[in-house]
Image (cartoon, rainbow, N blue to C red; front, side, top):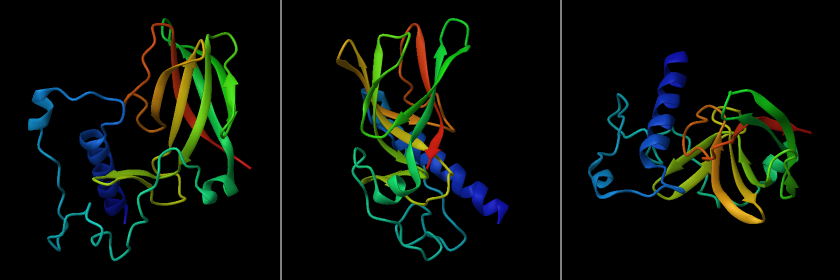
Length: 179
């Protein structure tokens, strides 16, 4: 069972790393990168809808939509604001869903669009495949002086993937804020 969980986690990371293109520009050389396909002993591609051990995955969801099952269990997220210069945590911020909140001591405010406990991406888009916190991710909009500075995903397990870039501040998803 541990090997299967590890395999699924590796596949999820591979798909996320190779396929995720939200807020990233691809150069001509990126189009030659092969798609990673992992095949189970049955010969089926693990990423295919009918290969997840007989369980059909949920349909693709809009990244900005807060899922009812998430809002029933969580009231928001907890985020660390980190100084880029010294790597120290400046603040731990509790953020409710769908409210634009100013982050004290910074020129930024943030709006949390959604939170997925098990973020997965396929060729159709993103899904929350489970309520277990396997690959937590949050879709946020960061505003600097009321202009959008970042509209994308922050990943708890992979904070450097599509990371927001600022010379002074880094924003890292710590966890979901349960009710």
